[in-house]
Length: 291
Image (cartoon, rainbow, N blue to C red):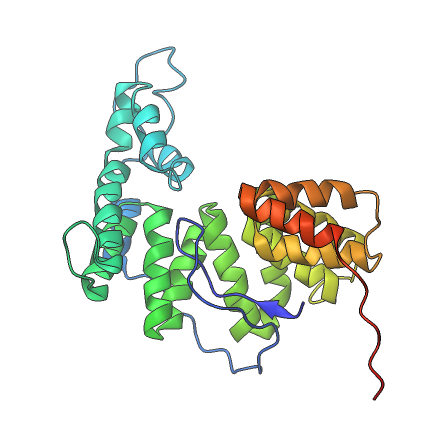
């Protein structure tokens, strides 16, 4: 179970195989920060709504506070929040614009929507979305930098997204610390706890690995099993496998074994489920081979 995965994009998906959990310690360089031009939204946004109506708690919410609360919102949530009042509509305009850049960034990255794949154009779009305050765009910009080998730039955007409360940014930042900065292991665990508590299944799985191995935290098989189970319930396949091993080996208790089986079966198609049950019913222990 000693494995650690690559960071994922703002959708919570990733396209990389597992990497070894332990990496050779490297000297920690000075981490780069997003340029001031990319953070213009945070510097230029009004500190409070202009002339809010008396007696309206919603419209009186400061612009910068609202922008930080909504930084990780996707377009449907932004549209809904923009209907609350005029002040919110005006305050959230940069984030709605960011969704347009985010959409184009994904098109350029994956070569969809009638455009050819172009990582440079994708990065430019993500940076424009990030400059308008979207943590979703920050995460995707960080991932492209990561893929380009510019990890310092990538971590700068992950860290900003994490500080604004984005679970994927928190998870990616933790993974980066584990892989490249062993001295920041405790910080990584803290970010994983935050993301896991927010329901991020990959963070839950990574946290379970740490608890299982005693990596940066006191080893606890029962706690590891609990987080494996949470991630498995969220549909994370690796967690389903690991929680099954935990219960098979008696690690973390056996009372939830039936529940784990049901969780796994619910994720399978009807044909795969029937096949799995057939294999389970006809399973026989293999004889040990003599050396």
